[in-house]
Image 1 (cartoon, rainbow, N blue to C red):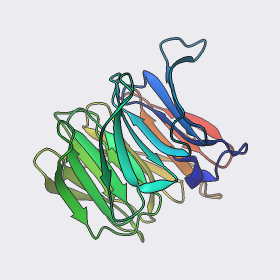
Image 2 (image 1 turned 45 degrees about the vertical axis):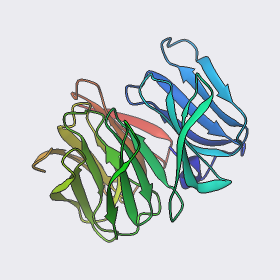
Image 3 (image 1 turned 60 degrees about the horizontal axis):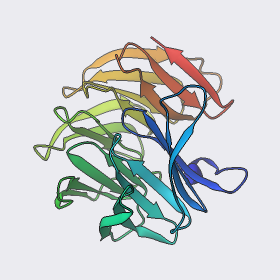
Image 4 (image 1 turned 90 degrees about the vertical axis):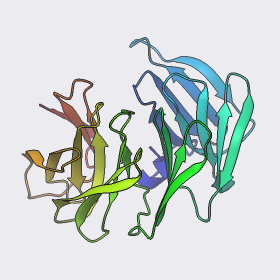
Length: 258
């Protein structure tokens, strides 16, 4: 999560906080660089790596438990660096025409999100396989990439006026379907671990819907009171897809639903 998009860190030091794909580690970007922590213990965070050669790290994404990390800094917001942190080497870097808003990884693809375009890379050699251009303005870099290599789907907003979600097959590089998820723009979305379900929330925060993937059929709908709208920042499924959690900004609270 890029903290700048949600009001920032009160201390002014933290810039981003992200779990890796299987939630076995935590990456923290700050004005001093970035750190990686192991989540093997529920009692304490074990620091496994610290990098301070580049400051103001606003995006840091680790590929599962591997040594591969993707980083972006505020000083070079259009440049993506892919590094091997155990060897302390830079594998490659790519520059883009606009600011990088989000980066997503799985075992076969690396996704770079700009405000009006998305770049899909082959993670083996980092070649650009496909570019989705002229997307609706997406200033927060909202997207979701399935962590499952067999069901390697990308979800991104299809409109900035209503809650349309586009589903794209990142292996076969083709558009799959458009889901009319909400009446108002989408604020959060997440795939389950198998890439067969997608949960979405709108900017109003009153309804969360779950759709089957790739056909886009609505499976479930969860409603809360409509008297007050809230901002839902994040959605996540449990590993077995029986539960999911939503994080809302209004009271900094988490809600679990089955």
